[in-house]
Length: 172
Image (cartoon, rainbow, N blue to C red; front, side):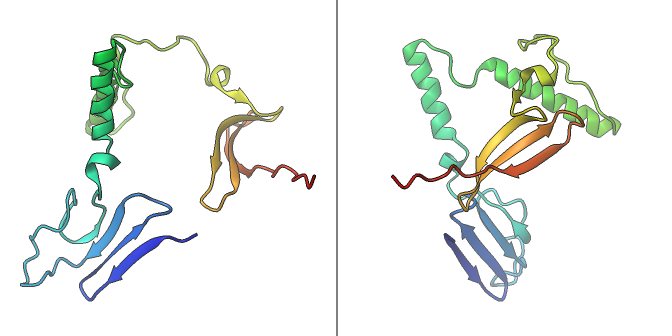
């Protein structure tokens, strides 16, 4: 099942892959009609030439309406929203560490004065056993219908992908 639209011209290409992705990928030389390279190309485009990845349906693709609907619903029903102030605090601490790392050119710790996670847990204690040799990280269904497993080798820590065997089909 290949569902995509593609338009190619002398000054660029735009294509939408509706099956594998939700966004646009487009290429433009920047030489638009009239010879102006600084014209508006697309919403949230990083530049006006080369490969661009604008957001097609920004409100839905970026989750704004879902986020606000959840927040207002949480207020009306007296519950916490799916994303809380604490979540934002953690994200900002991660960003702060990333900025420090960019400046120092080395790994920087994430400083959280308030940590609500579990202390002293090793990664192995939080992973799900798959069998004697692997932990299960993730199960996926690929675009072509295959079931894929992402596993972590217990002995060496390497991540491996395996196709999950199909269940035998009963003809009864």
